[in-house]
Structures are given as structure tokens and as C-alpha cells.
Image (cartoon, rainbow, N blue to C red; front, side):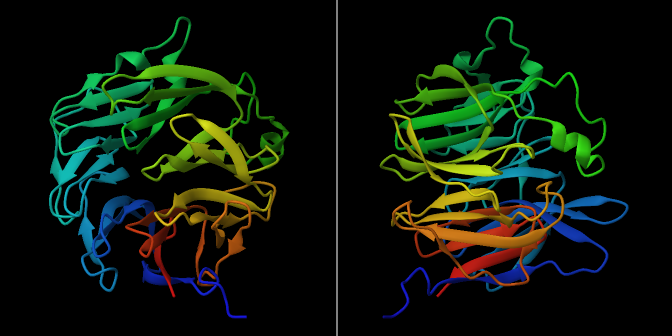
Length: 355
């Protein structure tokens, strides 16, 4: 019997920032079309960090570095040319597929990411329970009333972090995680014994939902372990949800199927030895999980081998060949169509799924 179509595919490096004294830490990537792609991050050496992006207009055959003026946080593209970039200091827009950017007026609060249904109507989310709406492409913003703080809630420890739509049905996710009364005064990698003695506890998880393309939103909350890191939908409402857990939880991550707008979820994957950092659901129904191998007791500290699994039925997961050079602490997936899927690493690599 011949190999299955999934088994015949492999991830090959198409771009690698290979400089001896600096690293390109990619934080996000978008492929709004099969030919055009943008990856953003910072070039870091021993003394400084310089914001930078790389862009392609020929499906990854060539990549052009484009310096940025502010450190990027996330990207959103509406079509091949029009996109927005969230930075540490504001919001930028491109009409040239990332080859140049124009800064938009100052937002009323810091944000993590944006999502647009069309050229004018969009939303932005961020810390202190910021959930904003624009009707003019990002020039002016207003706070969503449904996102207001509840009685007794300290918004300093609350954030909205993700936005996803399936047709007219939308979802914004967030969390409230107050600081612990005790905890390691040093980073986990400097004080691993203390870090590993901590135990994850449930905390409030937020959601804002709409069924009318954002005209009205409804707020709900529930106690949750972990945080919802990603939600990916296909237009008819099927989707995947990625939960990320603290370093002391048994599993580093958990992937659930999600049906929208009902919100029904079901665990489809978790493994103590695989830290899933991104998920993707292609238009043909194929699901992809990307992340890194877990070897030590502390996760996400030292780069390790990049791993990708795929599934047609969300029950049987097949490991996919990945270029052996690919190591990272996090991997990011992006694509345009079922036959055009890409992966970036926080170690400066961009890989393409090829046959």
C-alpha cells in the first residue's frame, strides 16, 4: 500500500535567519494569500533589539527584510494587501502586504491583537479587560459595554487575548489571574525547584460572544484551569481550541474541538511530552498541531525539536516529517487554503508544508 497523502507531506525550511551574533525572534506570521506572506519579530543581540519583518510576494521563494519602527506583537490581514500590525506602542496599517506600514491614531488602551470583518468594522483586545470596537478601520475606537468589569473585580489582573469568528458568530476569550501570595521571586529557569512546587489553581475565564456580526455581545465567565491561547474556526462553525497550562500542570497543553455557536467542546489531544503552541484547521477539514518536544521538568525554557501532528478525524494523529534543523520554544502556523500551510519558529525559521 502506498503512503497516505498526509504521510507524504513534509515541512521544509524556506527561510532561516542565520547570523552568528544575533537572533530573529518571530512573534507572528500571516499568509493572506498563497503568494504573499509576512512574519514579524525582533532581531536580538547582546545589547539591543531591533524590530524587523520579512515579506514574500512569490510564495516563499524569496524573502525581503523590512525594518519596523516599533516592536510587533501580532498581525491580522483581511486580504492579500490590507492588514494591521499591533505593536508595543500602538496599531499600524499596511495596504502593500507588509512592505510599508502607516501608524494609526493612538488607541485608548494597550492591545494584544485585532480582528476585522471588513475594511471598517473590527475589534481589539488587550490587558485590563480592554475590548474595543472600531467602525472606521482603526482610526477611532470605543469600549464594548459587555466587557465592563464586574463588581469587586480587579481589572489589573484581567485580559482579553483572542478573537475569532465563524461567519456572523464571534468569540472573544480572556482570563483573570491574580498574583499568588507566594511564588518564586526569580524566573522559573533560575529557581526551578520553587517553580515546580507551585500548583495551578482554577481562575476565572471570560468569553464575549456575538451571533449578529458584533452588533451585540454577551459576557460570561467560569472557573478554569489554564488559559485559552488559540481558537481557530472554519466558516461553518467547526473549530479547534488550544489550552495552555502552567509548568507544574501535568499536561503542557490541551486541544479541544469546539462547535460554534453552541460552544460545545471535547478534548481531542493532550500529551505530557508534546507542548502544542499553535493549532490550525484547514478548509478541507485537516487539523494540524505544532509545538515542541518536552524533555525536562520546566517547559519552554530551552529550544527543542519542533513537532507537527495532523489528523483528518481528530482522533488519529499522524507525526509529520519536519526538517531536523528546526528547533524552537514556540511554533506559529499560518496559511491560505488547504494547500498552502506555513510554520514559523521563535528561532527565526519559516517552513512550508510540501509534498
